Image 1: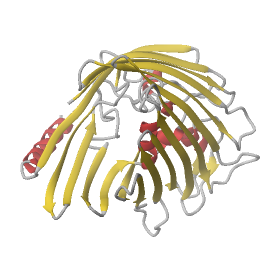
Image 2: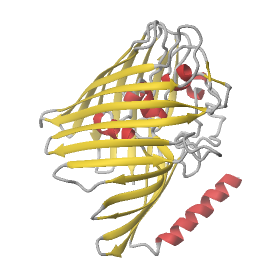
Image 3: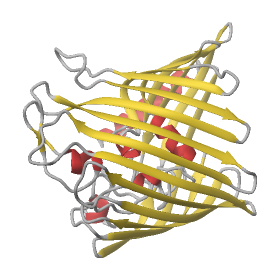
Image 4: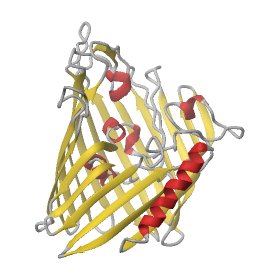
Amino acid sequence: MKKTLLAMALLGTFSSAAMAADKVQLYGIIDLGVEHLSYDNTSVNRLGSGGQSTSRIGVKGTEDLGGGLSAFFTAETGFCANGNDSGGNSVYKGTSQGAQYQAGGSYCSGGNFMGRLSIIGLKGGFGTFQMGRFYSFNYIAATQIDPFGTGMTGTIKNIDPASNNYTRVSQGMAYITPNFAGFTAGLAYAFGAQPSSTSNGQAYELNLNYKNGPLMVGADYLRHNYTATAAGSFNPYTSLAKEIGPAATVPADGYFTNKISEIYGSYDLGVAKLSAMYSQQKYGDGLTYAGTNQAPDLRVWMLGAKVPVGPGSVLASYAQRKDNNSTGDTKVKMYAIGYTYPLSKRTNVYTSYAHITNGANVDQYVGDNGINAAGTLGGQSSSGFGIGIRHSF
């Protein structure tokens, strides 16, 4: 009840403030679909919230400050359209799922109320500057390259840890250059906000992008000093790399480093839009590992296609990932196919199927835009079928 009253009060505040701005929009997405997910020799049938796009509601606006300069803001929260929470492995374990349960505090995306996006910024001839909590450049690239837009059961998030670990960045500031003949660059910095240490918890990211007609190519580098319990233990295998492995020891300064390097591109032939990405993801650099264990060093790649068929589009992708530092079998293979059909400018129906083959040291599950998880059995296959409807307003 308290959360409901707080939400209503905040939305009221946004509405009052919105009247003073030049352009303000209340917007959102509600997305529901029936899913059948198979994993670890079992399966579940469910009504999913946010199969293609996680359900959300937000307020955004701009104000003309004169001289080509404008201010803008965005405040966006998720919500569980199916009435159930979806955090962690709850969907796959059945925790708080079903007709008798009501969603609690997960909001099904973003982590908390207005946790998806909270941005204020300035835009002009110099480019764009923003502060707050916003999408990483890495994740924005994933939505552009993945034929499924990181949604449906075919989402690249099923096997790409970076698109889950770094969907958004908090405590962030970012600058994006103007477009120079198709070239743009972005630089983001996030404060660590830890006492007596500038390095602990901080992150930065550099993105380079070129778009000219049907061609788009880009490169991205993200580095994050991950805060953990000083001299305690942390498991980068299960927590970040999503594979099977033991915990490691955290150094006395209380953090370790993750590094994500990625190249990507797409080309629209008219009859089909082809896309590809290759990513190197290093997790847990600086931890002390026992025996022959080493920091996970993943290679993730994907080939995709989006083919117009009638008013809609056929979607297809094939992706793989592997830990180059592991002596075990960590290869994951995924293929996916889907179709989306517009009923109007704001409403579409969609369907998709995906299948994952796991090596002996990984157990990735098929999910969707709102749920992604991994098990501990290893060597199991997983598959998922979904059909749903999405409305934007």
